[in-house]
Image 1 (cartoon, chains in turn red, purple):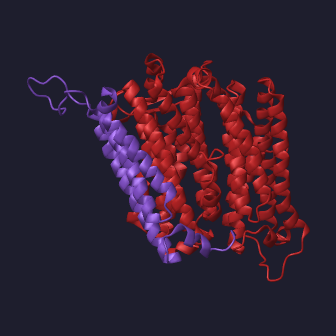
Image 2 (cartoon, helix red, strand yellow):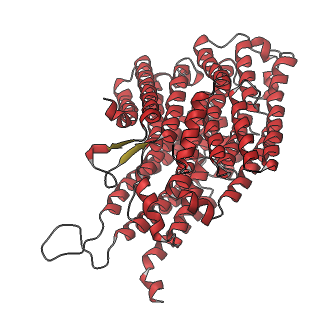
Image 3 (cartoon, rainbow over the protein chains, first blue to last red):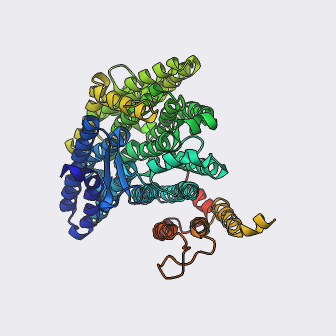
Length: 491
Length: 119
């Protein structure tokens, strides 16, 4: 049983998706989806445990040995990303049956669960596979499924947002597939580890350099690295809040994973950073993302759009960490993958609670919300504090490791910029808090808290934010392990 | 010069790729954008299939007297990529239908004019 965990990780949700269409009943599909995402979460916990105790797990799909067959190769980095994706899926799913989204789609709810499970499958597949072409196929599965999820938003703009996501996502994925094709032409293999072994023998010719460029730009589109982020704010703003919570917490994280995997494992530190000057442009773009996106977030009227721009800024921190090209920097990046999933998931779920009571997300319309929906706004505030990086929250741990890594890499300016950009987060979080707690509610404002079914998942994520702000051995331990392996320093 | 002509397949790939990408970026009509995207993807299919061709190679079927075979793997990969492309096109067109229902037009500027400032 445990020998087949890597295959089960993907197969469980993949099979449950079409089963939802056969079952159809609204409640039945919900329980089916819930059961499978929790099973996937359990599998990823077991996998992480297995990887941390006994090293890399390699699985030959269908018994075909690598490098000819498709290999699922799980090391600390994949296992951690799998845990993030399946964990967020398992927490967000219980939120759905009472959310506005399901009440809107009504009897067609089973199609939502089908698309949701496919999206989870795609993201898990990208993270677990050790085969370059397989990675592309899973990327497209997740991209098409999330496109469907985004188009379910209450406003008609969700349709155009989903269309733009489809176009941009497909261009990104096609760039990746061009890169994979060129690598295949140069090395004759599709297995990621095999490629890494064979690349030095090619002498890093022009084909390899072109493949590198295509892959990095493709991954940058997928993870919404500034200035290729333009699709993200629109998609997250108009998607249903539940979907925004899931995608903001997982989809871009998997994009960052793909970037790390190609930069560090496939092309290797020597080629990516010594032969080609990749670190400096990445660092510049990351810093620009932190400042430009945070500044734009300050001037947004809609809370959802504000959080979306804040996501672009937070992706800047992740890329900044890896652009330091040190074990510490990479650790900080991977820790932030995890912590940002927790805080953005919690914040978007809080928005989902607000959506249950009122349709407007304008900051002005949140006036007095602190008194009308005390639990929801308390969750939002706690999530906001984590986003800023206040001590005792997960966000603080990310910033702490990032600043330490910048100082250790002798980049005091970068460390200062991280602190300054966090202050920008204070401004945009404060705007919401100020409206919610220090203004009188407008006339005709709805009263009453969101139902418990919505509050519990939100508060579970908030509790995790606090827990991992104090007890950091899991994320930091796994991240350090992964970072050491990626930098070639041994586990 | 011989190299230039000999690699004509790749020139076609580059031309189609750029033409497709240009269509996607330049056109305001959503259906034409999907056409551009399909051309862009088709160029990639051609790139892979060209990679699989071995000079003087024949179809990869074991037969007497034949020693050089083309590489069948890129063809198989592209079969998968074509399926992905069809799914993308279908989903894209389905969205265009829904957009037309909601806005009464599939021109990007006219859609942009209909919605007021962002919510």
